[in-house]
Image (tube, rainbow, N blue to C red; front, side):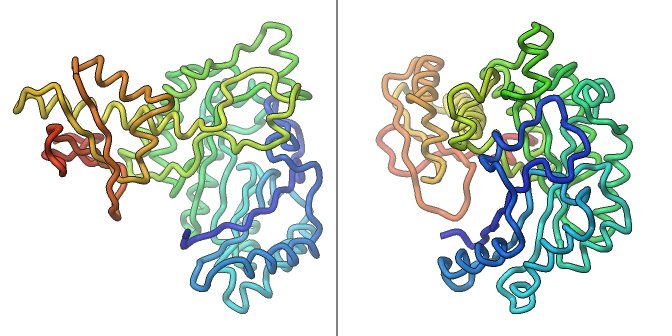
Length: 358
């Protein structure tokens, strides 16, 4: 059972002063309309009744630019949550918004209503990419606003997109490096999709935009994930949440959508981690019958879709047998290896040791 739950409300396009070329929030979120304030209270009450005692709960407002809403509307949403904060059922509120809709008075007002996390739709920190995507602000603004949020003691999130118009791998990795220097507490990485009803759809039909392939998107996200994990920044989301609206015929025109995109990226990480460990192990002991060990919560990531990681590693090392064993423990993201006849790993490689070798 999760010990932390976010009760989310989606307000598609609310507060957005212009549509970015890639954006169709109704399709992305699966919501065609926004909740009214009375609904917010009812939904929170229902969710709380379904949770066991002791679970930490937050309320989140996603999908639009919360701080670009008229203050009266922001306040109405925030006030709907106050009774639950006052009685201790909700520990805080998080909102997502645009960097150009945040300043010190805005942050101070939010803090007065229990907002503890602000996620910024950063997308990119490259000037050309921002301009081509309809983001009408300079990357330096992102840095200034991020530092303001951090200085106020709030938790900071950055939402990034890969495969935007005018972008390439070098720009994606440079954006990741600049984000690391800013130091948010968390990051989300989304591949750009071509959605019906967007300016990007027109560019795609005219042959002026070419989306990433699924393989390119996975490899780019993996490189960025590696950068962030090395820096100790948590990546809390890889890829869009599948929704019936997003998967409806005709809504998604092109792009690297996969319902388990994050699992694909993590699976690649486990493959490379296991490959390094097996190379080290076989320097000490020559055998073509091995077992790999992981935390059981990571079992599917290690195996890969359609056992792709197992097939790859067997071929790479000429193995006769390769088993994967899931164990129960408190830690994740480690990989162990040992000869076939052993019941416990003989060598173990943690994620941090893999990313930061001595």
